[in-house]
Length: 292
Ligand SMILES: [Ca+2]
Ligand SMILES: [Ca+2]
Image 1 (cartoon, rainbow, N blue to C red):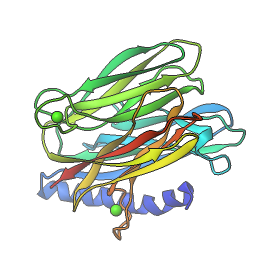
Image 2 (cartoon, rainbow, N blue to C red):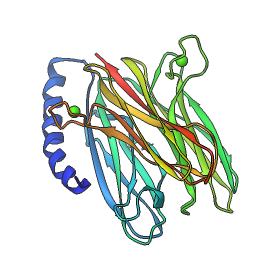
Image 3 (cartoon, rainbow, N blue to C red):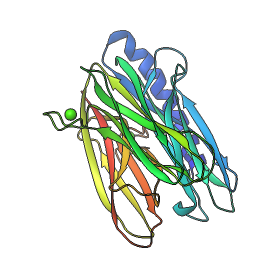
């Protein structure tokens, strides 16, 4: 199904869910969430962006994501360039690259919530020409990571996110609840900066689940991390096992599983490519799920 068709289908459901959220908030303080998205085209050989917001009121993003697809030239011609919360706007923005000779489509998802006590944190590092760099962004003490992303300065087509995932500081619980970890590739000849962004919550209980698959040389891989039981996705991310300029995230976003509804709340799907002619990697997709 094309994204355009999904937009029409899901719009009705999202509007319904928003109404339900507004009604429920009067009688209960329990956290509520719904996912909404916006898509657009990317012209050949350009970088483009699209954002999606949570509307007015008290809904805020716990997480977000997105990326690009090319029907004609496949995942190898497109990649994710940035996926971050928009400061002060209760929105999420995604940038994507299209190296192909035809238009591609791109999408931004935002998980909108109420009832959490959220903080945003970021960490910035230099991203020199022809290098791959990474940094975690640590959540404040007493909070749990619920979502996050990576920003890369510049707008050339060889600036690509290769990992954006929940991060464990090495504390006793060994859960990736302490912040967000990002890695970015700069295949260009110009120095840039990258930032990892973490969204952290003071309340709520979260499960961190993952799914892995092999990312073969000159291959594409998909990983789907499904939220357990009745838990709902609030954020998620994607990890590629080793650093290198040849591995790229194509898209990283929430999905709707075969649960009978059309709410995009069942887990997180990750897609990545390996442009190298040798050396296999592991793709790991992560979902952060709110446990009620
Ligand atoms: Ca931990
Ligand atoms: Ca669903």
